[in-house]
Length: 287
Image (tube, rainbow, N blue to C red; front, side, top):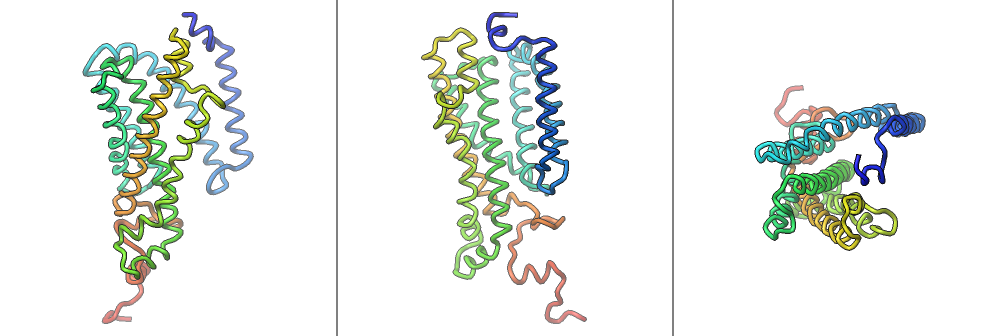
């Protein structure tokens, strides 16, 4: 065990028991307060599952990553796996219908240009030990922004569909009517990243900064690396939110209205759409 490891956390039985107690507290409080959309225990089970998965996944990654960083093909495969899991997670957090795969677009649109720029300028070396953590941070930021923008904008459109219809009546296109309603809600997805950047060094010392210090870097270098990560994250998240908003506005990425099963795939709730949806008789139909 090196000095950096000892300085942070000793990996022993005490750490294991402490983690188990903290996870139990998280599950118990979530269940007791019924912190779930349907006031059930579903979210508590998710907390327990998330904690267990994190332990298993980090244990596996700790073993695998030491080999992956030294093999080009394995490195590319690992990065693609990170991206695929992020897409699946984001898509399924936004919707339960078949449009979930559109989440691949905002995540890629945010991450790929940022990584390409960092590689082209030489700020990010083409080595697995540097590429994996930085790309992982950016993918994680794009994942969070995509989920928040997608969930909030689709929920807003569901709740305020009457205002969308009013926009159509005024002559707006479907895309323009939807985007005007969804934009304020989607923009809230930028708030967590903005708060993290505003308060860095005052409220928290983020992982990149702490990791650099534990690795032996001087404080100035650690601060510069953390700043570059935060600014890159803001750029990635801004692109991801913008693309997600556009996909929702164009009905590419949709979500079923609350209380329904079938998704409103590429359908706007106009008067004619409601009649057809609820089976109302049309002119010329039989009784």
